[in-house]
Image (cartoon, rainbow, N blue to C red; front, side):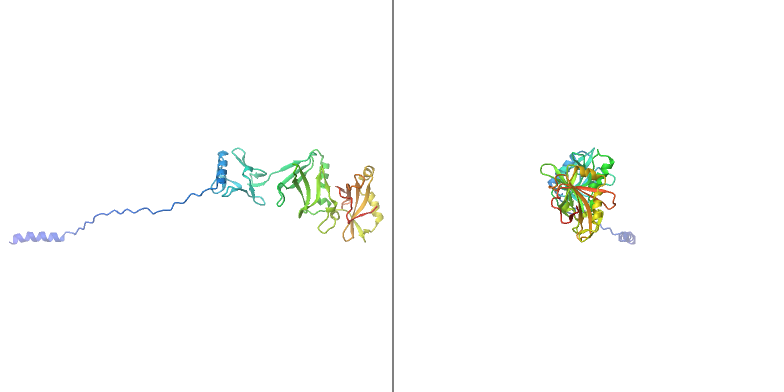
Length: 342
């Protein structure tokens, strides 16, 4: 009996000592990817698309990107940008300029060009292109930018170039004679202006900068015709009082009339005999200040019979060495600031 129980008891003990094993079935869970809202592609303006196509058709060098920059290969073209509507803007000048697409061209060999402007490759800055209009006599007007507030095509004349046929002395004399400061205007008080006319021609005026309607001189043939009535400063005095040889006045007349008269005969030095011979209507006058205390003597020499107001005004400048002269056509009724000496 004991022999049977001992083996049976041993089996029971072994079974109780075995570890407990739990079987868990494997479950695979598949999660769906997060749902995303697609970002719509921005719709470009038709004019922008057209410009983009035009630039692309110019060759392989230039491209217009969707953000409005114009690329020259890996470099950005300086100063040019395009807005969402396809409008081109030129920056880098004193003010931004809206450009017509027809005035901007792209070429793989020539690069980018803008009508009326040039790009300085070294600085990356744009400037107004030099444009010179020549007169039949060879005098050149270098045109600047459009003048703001004036009709289309009205541009500032940034320089007046004497004829290349003239010698050095004549060029220097001409440059001095057309300079408004020679006659007493302040620097910047006036400016030369190019004005296209309806007949396809043009005229050049000297305008007062503060008032374009105040025309002081107009170019004609190869010289300017000055308007003596407009040659006054802001105080109402004739500008010659800022540039000419001053004569002391008292009570509206020269302190020493005899000296003034004798000086008048020597006023034009070497010009005098030729003037007397060719222009017999040669008279001495004096410009008088508003307070009557100062004056500048001058000679008016009529080019005709003296009745049409056309002729030359000669006066000596402050250094007592140089005789200045201008041509006028409005000396018929002498202004109130002019007195005749003899």
